[in-house]
Length: 281
Image 1: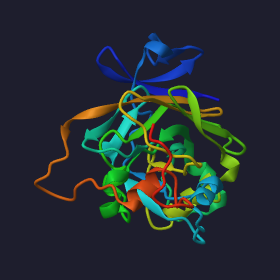
Image 2 (image 1 turned 90 degrees about the horizontal axis):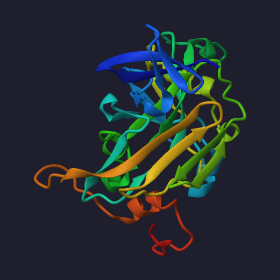
Image 3 (image 1 turned 180 degrees about the horizontal axis):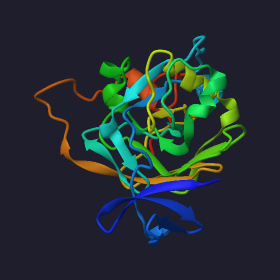
Image 4 (image 1 turned 135 degrees about the horizontal axis):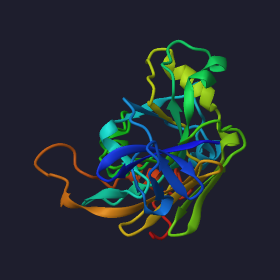
């Protein structure tokens, strides 16, 4: 399966093809995969994410799914890359990982059927749909500040074409320990359905990204943690958590909160005994 990566090489943005443990630019220059300065593998005009899709995640929250998917938007200013730092703003506590598969559009899509959707997909990459749940009390509907803050949408390492999404394993690691372990087969709505659903009313352009949902066990991470998302056939996306250099401004807008809603979401759903939480990492 061909894999394409965008990297910074000698000060320029370069598109490369992976050849074993090297990346090859169009002019023949080569750089070791381990030494490359990665960029997001695509430049989307928009990033759209499904709220809930994996059955294990739904069961974890002890809720039912609607008949059709619901979505939220992550602005392109939230984009990040393999190896990039994920910034948790000073004064915030509840930054959660969510390992996912990202669908990348290859041909303009509008008003297509699920059967036609595959012809409009360029390929797939790995994503981590981080959420800053400190803002969930004010943005639970739009999810804009929860999911849209700067750096919270890493994609990569590369764009893989000719990848069959069926039956693929997805794992998330924190400091080398497996914390999420799921499969694309537990998705209620598959990749083709998601593309066709959005394209009914929103034109999808080449490079646009759809995030397809996360399995159970999204939990908070701390500055210093290394988070990796590995998807069978797509590779491993690695990022590390840092504290932002400035606190959330207190003279404007909603402030971070630590309500039952925030804790319930960050720590895994509607626990049997509300208010009794597992030890924090």
